Amino acid sequence: MASSLIIGQYVPEESVVHKLDPRTKIVMIFAFVIFVFFANNGWSYLWLTAFSIGAALSTKIKLRYIARGLKPVWFLIVFTFLLHLFVTREGDVLFDIIGFPIYTGALIQGVQISMRFFLLILVTSMLTLTTTPIEITDAIETLLHPLKKVKFPVHELALMMSISLRFIPTLMQETEKISKAQASRGVDFRTGPLKERIQAVVPLLVPLFVSAFKRAEELAMAMEARGYKGGEGRSKLRELEVRARDYLAVVVFILMIVGLFLLRDM
Amino acid sequence: MQENQIVFKNVSFRYQEDQPWVLKNVSFSIQSDEWVAILGHNGSGKSTIAKLMNGLLFPDQGEIFVHGIEVTPETIWDVRAKVGMVFQNPDNQFVGTTVRDDVAFGLENRGVDRLVMIKRIKESLEAVSMEDYLLHEPHRLSGGQKQRVAIAGVLAIQPDLIILDEATAMLDPRGRKEIISTVNNLRVETRVNLVTITHDLNEIVDADRVIVMNEGEVWIETSPRELFAKETELRTIGLDVPFVAKVTNRLKDTVEFSEQPLRQKELIDTLWTFHSQT
Ligand SMILES: Nc1ncnc2c1ncn2[C@@H]1O[C@H](COP(=O)(O)OP(=O)(O)OP(=O)(O)O)[C@@H](O)[C@H]1O
Ligand SMILES: [Mg+2]
Image 1: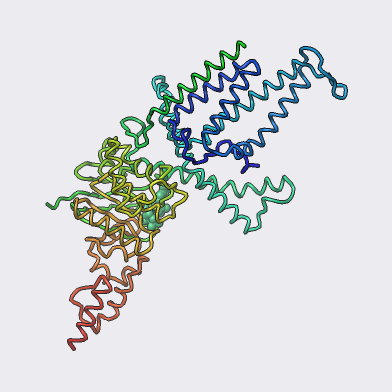
Image 2: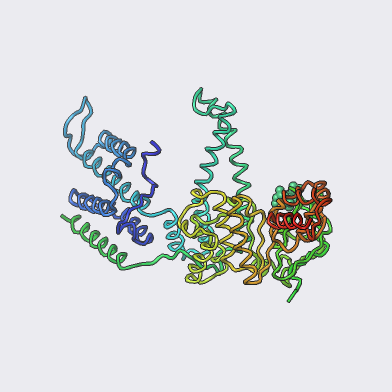
């Protein structure tokens, strides 16, 4: 299941969406998340769905891949739908299912809520699908930059994120190595009662933590030796650049929002 | 223009009050554009010396000067601006998410302009033959490749003093030769100091001078040639001379050496010329 879940995975492609400035993407997706709640009738939901699918198509990532990746989420969406269907009691009774009355209001609300859920998941997953984690980090750093005035440690946060990104694969490799080493000594993580399996994780975690702390200490020293003394007076190699396509994307997005509000009143 | 650029004056150091001294009354000096190798067994205090040179640690007794600046908590940033250091473990000094970002790290810290940065990153990665790996993540690199990147990171900041703390330990013999000669050429061209730290006597052959550490004390300060003759003494402090030196020292009774050969070629030349004389 873990491997089929695509939320948080980056899929490299040569598409406009990939090339957009990560800040543009973050801001637009954030706005989308808010505007989803403004949809109030069938047409407006259809409009938003069309836009999201259009956006998904323009990433050049296969829709089938995205749909398959959202499989675990489908279950949640269906579950939310059914929950609302049976629990809400508004409007007229439409029909009965084995003694349960189904109301029109329930049907409408069920569809609405699960549509929203679907749209939110689809659009937010597009951020990570088309943007590398480091780009997201850079974008967050610049977007949060104004918070520096209130002493929010923006640079430190971004550095922390990028160092975590750098060390996650290393620590994964290490976990693998330790678990193999322990398995060769007879520790069994995979079979047996749950209690024993949990106990078997201890000899995995202890060396992992010890080595992570050692790494952290050495890394801190290496960073100091390389002249790191905080965000003051630092220059940056990776530069974010707003280009024509970003303005174009924003215009398209605004037109979509205008359309949404027109459809709302229909 | 021979100046004492790095000076250790009666330096003593221990990591904690209740622990034994790691360095005991260490004194030495290194001249400008000199290549000095620091040699010693495991735990003899070599890495500690390197960290003291860079203001990562401070001496409990004695003084340290780097290019005229005394290393104190107030001057560390001036000192670190001049010193480029590569540590033993290449994995734990790789800060960036890609090769390019890692080489950039030291430059970013110094506030180097972006365009200059791009140029220097390219040049220094070329110097260590890693230009094809620009966008690789560290977990897709071998240990030796990470060491090359770390060295590129040091070259990029154009330091006055380069310290390599067993930084070539993970390279194969050919790679090591390549990297060391790259760094050495740079030293000759730009007159930087080079300090290499090792416990392998094969790696000191080209150095100007060797400082041998034993149990936290300077055991001897000498040239590689003279050191190679001290095979039996070196063995008492846990160091082994290379094959060439071993052969030479066995043959000394029968063959006349004008000077201790360092390289295989020198030994062979001495041997065949000696043979032809008799
Ligand atoms: N952070 C530390 N805290 C306490 N003791 C330390 C620390 N680092 C090193 N030591 C001790 O100081 C002594 C010298 O260590 P150092 O790392 O300088 O040796 P070294 O010559 O570099 O050895 P190696 O060849 O293994 O790298 C060792 O006895 C070691 O146990
Ligand atoms: Mg060491």
